[in-house]
Each structure stands twice: as C-alpha cells, then as structure tokens.
Amino acid sequence: MTGLGAITPLGADVASTWDALLAGESGIRGGVLRGHEDTGLPETVAGTMAVDPAESLPPVRARRLDRSQQAALVAAAEAWADAGAPRVDPERLASAIGTGIGGVRTLLKEDDVLETAGMRRVSPRTVPMLMPNAAAALISIEYGARAGVYTPVSACSSGAEAIALGARLIRAGEADVVIAGGTEAAITPITVAGFVQAQALSRHTAEPASASRPFAADRSGFVLSEGAAVVVLESAEHAAARGARVRAVLAGAGVAADAHHITAPAPDGAGQISAMRKALAQADLAPARISHVNAHATGTPVGDAAEAHAIREVFGRATVTAPKAGLGHLFGAAGAIEALIAVLSVEHGVIPPTRNLTAAGIGPDIDLDVVAERRDVPQEAVLSNSFGFGGQNVSLIVTGARQHASSRTASTTP
Image (cartoon, one colour):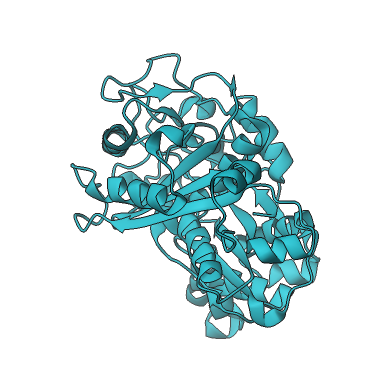
C-alpha cells in the first residue's frame, strides 16, 4: 500500500482527517437538508464533507460530475501523488472503486428538471453522472488504467470490497498496480427518509456531535455521511523496482456472506466470523497477533451487538475502536476510509478514540475493550471490518511493512 487519499467529514485530505480523528473531533453537522419540513423529514444531522470537492476541480469539469465522482477524483489524486505518481504500464494498471448508491444526487436533480421544465432541459450527461461505475471509469481515464475497471456495489462494504478485489487482481497476476477505494455522496431527502422509515438512523439529533454512538449503551442508529477514500495497491516486485515507500501491507482479505436477511445481520454472526477468519488465514496470522479491530460499528443496536458477538468468537475480548463515532457512516466509502485508518494506526502506533461513550457508557451487550481515549501503543496488525446490507461481509488485515517482511515472503502481497 503505497499511496493514500481521502476527503471526509473530518478533513479535506488524509492528514487532516487523521489529526481530527485522533483528537476525538466530530464531523457531524446539524441543519442539513433544510427546506423539506413539509414532507415530514425530521431535523437531519449528517457528516457532510469538510470541503466541497468541486473546489479542487476545474469549474467546467466539476459541473459535469456528480458529487460522488468529484470526491473520488479528489481522493485518487491525493493517493496517486502520495504514491509518487508511479510510471505504470497501462495494461498492468487497474481501477476498483466501490459505491453503495452512485450518483443519486444527479438522478434526483434531473428528475426534478424533467418534471418541472421538460425533457429538453435534462442534461445529456445525466446517465454518466449517475452510473455507479462512473467513478472507477473516470479514474481509469485519468490515469490510463487499462487492466480493468471494477465497481463493487455492496452497500456499506463496497469500499472494502474494492480494496480486497484490488489485492486479488494483483495476487492473480492480472495487475501490478490497482487504484482502489470507495466513494459516496448520498445525503438526500429520499435516502434519509428511507433510512428513517427503516428505523436505522440515530435519534440523538439535538447535539450533532454526539449523534453517532457506536457501542454505547444508548446507541439508536447511524449517522449518514459522505466522502471518498482511495489507496494505491502495488505488487511487492513493482514497488521494490521503483524504490517506492511502502506505507503498509494488505496482508489478508476475507469476504463472506450471511445468506440471511437483506438488512439484518445473521444472529449467529456466521458470515462476519467467516470473513475475519478468512482474512487471518490469508495473512497467516493467529488471532492473538491482531493488535486491535477497527470495527464496522455503525451505532445500530442490533448491528453493533452482532459484530461484538462475532469479534468475541474469533478473538475473545478484543481491543476495538469505532471510527464512525467521529466520521459518521460514509456508506459505500466507509470500508475504504477505515482501511486507511488501519494503515495510519499501524504506521504511527496509535489507536484512535471512540467518541460518545462517556454519558451512558459501553453497552452491556458489548463485551469488548472499546477504546474511549487515544492509545499510543505499537500496532503489529489491524483488522478492519466492513459489513453491508445484504449480508456482505469484508475483513481486511493491515500490517506494517517490516512486520510482514519478517514473517512472510510472499512477493505478490500488495
């Protein structure tokens, strides 16, 4: 893993996001989606991006892109620069960008144009602006990636699945470098209304900064956020040949399904347990080697309890942190930004804090060591979970470059 890029509710880039997360700050804001009171939509708190991604793009180009695509391009540019803008054979470079929904903002906007002004006022760019695969395709075009364009659409696990897929492409010999990650910009009246009706969103909206409460005793749902995160994955040979700085190693990736329910996790945690154990097996690591778990933990009562049960089955009473307490739930981009957080945890030897645990404390159904205050302690390996609607489970294991090299010699590990 040689390059990182992000734009999130906590910051305009990787460094500002990381600093804010370590400081225990919140990217959740109130007063979002004003003007829809007549629909019955409640006061909305959400994690809007810290800066407008359009500001980092030429105005004409920005107007031709959905907000989710803008964010993906901004994050990819940072990641590519962080990797040293490597020279890569186009036939050996791929793009894999996941998203849960795609260009929903464009869809809603142009549907409104159609209804109010007629077909002739609908933008001819509507379809490419709403296509879920457009972000991956635009990145492919931007960097000349011809080895393939991939778009996992797996709800909350989309970004993590894209990274797992990128590693798989490299291990299979189909690519030397993959630009992988996730993007989402779906804070709209219809998505919020749908989540409200599904009773999935936090009811603690009076104080936006305390709305997202993963693992807390009084958690009541998640907070929808937006943003993008991208990582540059390289084969060990390719990185070594160009003298690249290796920030971390994606040592293992596990993917499994619940085959249970379209939104609820399996009560026995079988799919989540399987994903974590597959990741451990691929990384050739015993559970005790995992320094901490970067939990999916969205803040829903059922979801957090199910994940806690699954983690206990694999690791016992593990040390865990929940980044969504500060970031909110970036949906299709969540797994990607949390993979980046795992990289930074290993790189800097620190576990970020989990906000909003002090008032009610940790839930009695969460028998885990939840990190409430920043912990500075060496991190050998971090496992990051992403579990999506549909029972789609992805676990990624990130290790330091030195630790991995000393314990394993597989040259194709990205």
